[in-house]
Length: 202
Picture 1: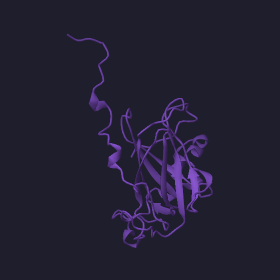
Picture 2: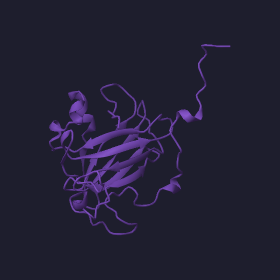
Picture 3: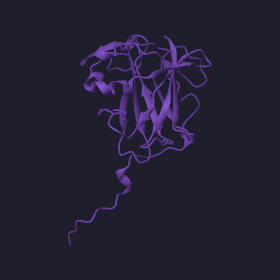
Picture 4: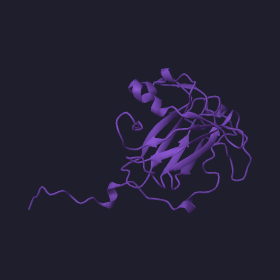
């Protein structure tokens, strides 16, 4: 017998699995590390990217997993798909993972990325982020740009309506205890169209 009654959501409809905090280790959020306990040897200007992951209404998104990856200071990736990958900084890992705390906060230590050119055109310096968490139906992907760079010409950022582009540009936030510049950007998962963080299909 057919019915128009709503179906009950099942477990497969949400992304997973979810990892316990013991899955993460100290330094996972440091893109400059090459080995646990090893001192950073990456070339370039060190920086911190911090922020909060927020739900609709401004509540914290707790225990969300964020992954970050980016080019080195010269705009190269340590990946074979980069034609110049063999010239990439051997002291820069270029990838890290962070976990939001009870207030939805996250932090990545990295270096200021370099600009580069790909098939879409000249890319402004940026950090790629993906996000997964309980209640999120799929992986979310976005880019974080830095102030003072040639962001207006970036082919990805320019796909957004002009009023939304500032939502992906981090704000200066002083200097960290280790002397690195700090930048901050909050990610709003759901909200008013003019405030919700733009995410991209990858």
